Length: 132
Image (cartoon, rainbow, N blue to C red; front, side):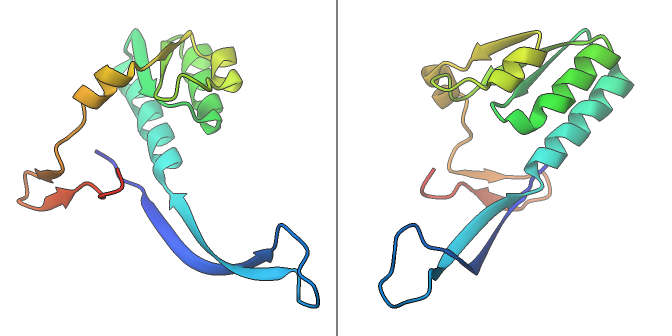
């Protein structure tokens, strides 16, 4: 498992609607995911180059992975299947470069989730956020 992280900070952004007599800037709490895209791409490329599988599957619907899939497929000649966790909105970018895009069935996805708490081999307990 290769984790990214979430960074939350307060930033000033332009508001969506007019504010009579006030600045058009408002403070908002912004949460950004950091590292997950890069980690997925890095380890997928590492595996493709060093393990040379005949097929790779990535669970993603993120168009940011287009170059990753394209390189693995075109430059390395490895078939790539994108397993889409949100089949209602498949990424056109991924469909254009993947060998195949398959939906992850909701029941199969739900059945394959980790329990709310998992203890790692080092003895650390990792908990799933409640909102998941």
